[in-house]
Amino acid sequence: MSSLTKVILQRLGLGVLTLFAVSLIIAFAVELLPGDITQAMLGQSATPETVAAFRAEIGLDRPAHIRYLQWLKGMLTGDMGRSLASKREITEFIGTRLSNTLFLGGVAAAIAVPLALFLGLLAALYRNSIYDRIVNLTTLTSISFPEFFVAYILILFLSVKSGIFPGISNVSTDLAFGDKLFRTLLPALTLTLVVLAHMLRMTRAAIINLLSSPYIEMAHLKGVRRFRVITHHALPNAWGPIVNVIALNLAYLVVGVVVVEVVFVYPGLGQLLVDSVSKRDLPVVQACAMIFAAVYILLNLLSDIVSIVSNPRLLHPR
Amino acid sequence: MGKLILGAPLSAKIGLLIILCYVFTAVFAPWIAPYSETAIVGSSYELWTEQFIFGTDNIGRDMLSRLIFGARNTIGIAFATVIIAFLIGGVTGMLAAILGGWYDMAISRLVDILMAVPSLIFALLLLTIFGTSVLSLILIIAVLDSTRVFRISRSAAMNVVVMEFVEAARLRGEGMWWVIRKEVLPNIMAPLLAEFGLRFCFVFLFIAALSFLGLGIQPPTADWGSMVRENAPLINYNDITPLLPAAAIAGLTVAVNFVVDWMLHLSSGLRSD
Image 1 (cartoon, rainbow over the protein chains, first blue to last red):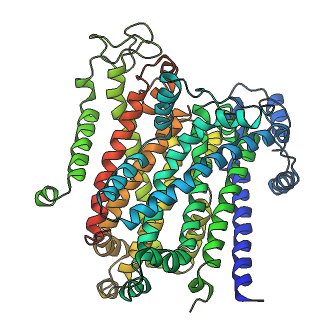
Image 2: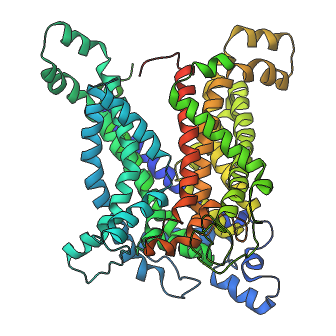
Image 3: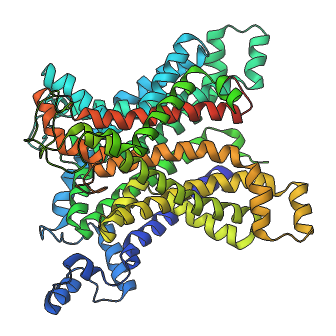
């Protein structure tokens, strides 16, 4: 087995292990509560019968390890249990929610990634110029903005004042693709602005880091033209860091989606999660948390693997 | 200190000034605010008049007064959370660097796993279980955030622990706390301070987001995040009132970030990039 596949298999194994550990935490977080979860959820006035019924419903009458194994098996086979609030099978409604969220994230990424890479590259190439300074200040400012601030400013200008976009993104499955895209555009734009600053700064730092390495200086010294230095010497080595930046920010997008979905009443997984938290609908929260965590871990794993594959120095560690 | 501030770039000076204004408002809130925090003084959603400078909110409380009291509640809770996070993360991190061995291994792996999941998702899960009260909010976020502090303080302390003067202190027979307090802590203060600013911004935005989602600070406490949520319908009538608390949040984080940016510059030895 070559060392490359070995390292990648190691990382994959580590990722599966992390997923397993996280699933343990999500399943057993209930046990953290001092006392009994049923008391906390049903209140002091609950009769013994309702308490017993509730315990049976969320499976607390079975021993913990069996409960966990059944939950894990359900997660893997697509049977996520039943919602406490609506009594419906979670699998019935979580699928469309997930695809809506992935669609929103995908549209945001399609706008944000090329834009951030391009602007970041420019800032790195023209370092310490006025453009770079302006980029630095504006990105620093927009990193500090809460997501809902960006969202409401966009609603105010692009929806209320000018009426270009609808202020509420009530997409449903029977919409045509174009219509769905149009209604998703405003939340996607918000998400873009939220991740753009991070991604731009990270791209800039990665490229600057690269441009200061000795072989770039060597290329400059031997008289290679600036453009050729970038395309032939810098870029081949930059893919690792750049893909890393993209994957990290996609992972960040996964979380940013929660607040944005609530602002735009977008029927995605994030809104479902928030609704379920306020209803204390534990099975749904656990299912959503597991999906979010899995996507996040997988994206981080991907960035890890890509940076190994594209970096010969990590491939052959001394 | 004074010389240091005078030599700071303009953005950092502006940042410091803004932070001072926020702190002043938070401390003297009851004297500045025209009305009390929870008093209903008019009908709901009144327009901006001389009596109510920013109008009234969804149940007729004075917007300006709630903005002013919000400074106290929102900043206070975020500040308390970060302090607790630094106490937990800083102490365990420095201990991990000094003790090493299985203690370091065990706690580092635990932190790895906690950091493998976005803290918003974890916080939402824990809030479902513990319910939404200010105390559980502070403790949950402090514990989740202490993992990041642990990483920083551990790696910073690692570089100090191998120094001769630490070894000398240990050979002298000084106790663990003495080594942490007198040898390690003073030497990692600079990166920890910059990290404190960053963590404060993060926690502040985090709590604001949770409050905005209705899962953080609960009414009737005036808090900027929940104020945006309560008055959000106004935005559809071309009224910018709901943006005020959001702007208040943004203003403070921008200011702190400007100062932190400058501090990072200082601690990295005034490099140009």
